[in-house]
View 1: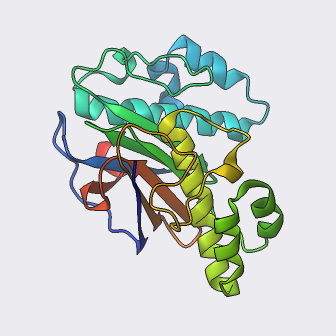
View 2: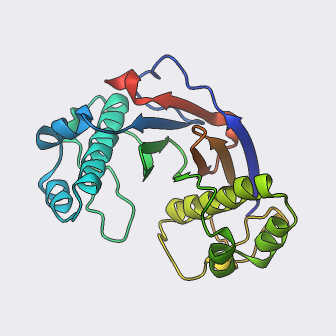
Length: 247
């Protein structure tokens, strides 16, 4: 397995929704900006399953509950666009330490969701599985302490050689690479993050096992957010889209 990386500043989102149906050879990344008055939250009672609704009730803070509701409505609207099925008719496997799947998809539809702050991102793959992560870039975060506990020695070494501005960008690049990998593979959070090397020092890092080569594309969602998507397709195959196209 080989691992390749690509990075870019702000990406341009497409102004037209992709056609319904499958799009082999492509990965589509959808962005939804949530906040007060998010219409997706009000749609939740008529779209979500009993399992999803019950899971939402377990959130202690209302803000977290609304993000969950908005995100799952977003997933259903995106999958509905491709499949032609009504959002409420989509059957998703319950999430129990595993990635959700659409069990009644008319053709292969892989998807993954990530949220942070006001950003909710959904990645869709048609002939590739996908993992995505978005993080809010905080200049005052304890990067050194976090890296010491979670980063590979090669990643820490490269981080230490950069100036302050580039350190912040690189720190969040590595963080989102790790998270997107864990979500691609379905591993979720684990205790071996320090073994996973996404520094680019090794073409085929020890500790990574997958049945195809992996491409990771990192970009700035905005000045405040940085994201990475992982799949078996190169960055030129990625299309960036906004939830406004399916409202």
